[in-house]
Amino acid sequence: MRELAAPARAFVHRIDAATPAHRDRAVDALRALAICGVVLGHWCVTALVPGEDGVLHTASPLRAMPWLTPVSWLFQTLAVFFLVGGHMAAKGYVSARARGETYGRWLGSRLGRLFRPVVAVLGVWTAAALGMLLSGVPLDTVHTLGKLALSPMWFLLVFAALTAATPVVARIHPLWPLAVVLHVDLVRFGLGGPAWTGWINLAAGWLVPYTLGTAWARGVPSRRTAVLLLVGGAVATAGLVRVAGYPAAMVGVPGAPVSNLNPPTLAAVTFGLAQCGLALLLLDRLRALLRRPVLWAVVAAANLVAMTVFLWHQTALMAVTATGLLAGRLPGLHTAPETVGWVRARVGWIPVFGLALTVCGAAFAARERHAPGPLGAPVPVPGPTRPPAIPSRADGSPARGGGTSAAGGAGAGPAGGAESCA
Image: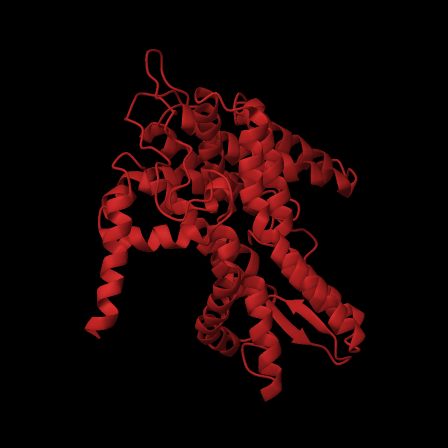
């Protein structure tokens, strides 16, 4: 046992010693929590159920058991990821300009780090889809599995577009994209406009937390601002659900007439504002916790493989589901998600999904950790810096006379690959 504990202790101390004192560890923690939330959320509410025709279909326990809706509130954490992404992109761009780095070089390093792990996913699933079709698997099943495996890609495309636009959107007040979301929903739901207008919110909706992040990069939002985001966002979301008839679930539910996430609705955006407010309120608590070397090592390790986890977690779920079919239809894995028994069984399967994801990570994480360029460092180097507390206006911009330097905020650090996508 001591032989196993010694390398672990050495790893913990090596990570802690290599982390600069000025690094804001709370930023890395928020990124890791956001990724873990998305993964656990998908594993909790995604079921693959064989139909009578032998075709696999996706199903969600939220449809038959709406009392599980709070699960979607806990695990739908993409707004926090965009908040951190905007924060890091804005600081990184300012730092790059201070070093004399061109926009093209800065963007290329970030997007290269973001998309390098994607190549492996696309290659594996292209081969898998061809293999399934040639072996006689129904086309609808292949479509269901492929769509589930590649669904994280929409997020990467939106994130890449916002990253590329950082020099421009960093100047935008978050209320502007929020107003766009509001008017799109008024046209779509209030005036009976065409459904395609909702896709405008795919950019505008995630631009709201992203621009909150860029405002955060200009100065630490006051506690009052964070409380306003949390309370105001929560109240607005509750009103939209109770009065305006928006779905209470913050994720898509198969068969539901409206999804809050696909594309994002005003309710999803206001809910994201509440999450961002809570995240900002937790910064000091996270910084205190992450002074403990063991906790920091866990966060650092998680950030090293963040993109791999995000891209492969659905594949891990499907691999376990397919393998389990060899033993017949197993509860919580192949049965319809309609009973409390299914929920209990699914909780038991989550560690198995985690084990399968670990196998995927062992096979493909190297593509993330050892990507070329300044963002590929596999050990902690200067990264997100912790700015001094300064007064700020309600929009997150520094008050007159206040400000922070972002010159040190673009390194790779233990976030490794996640640095480029958040």
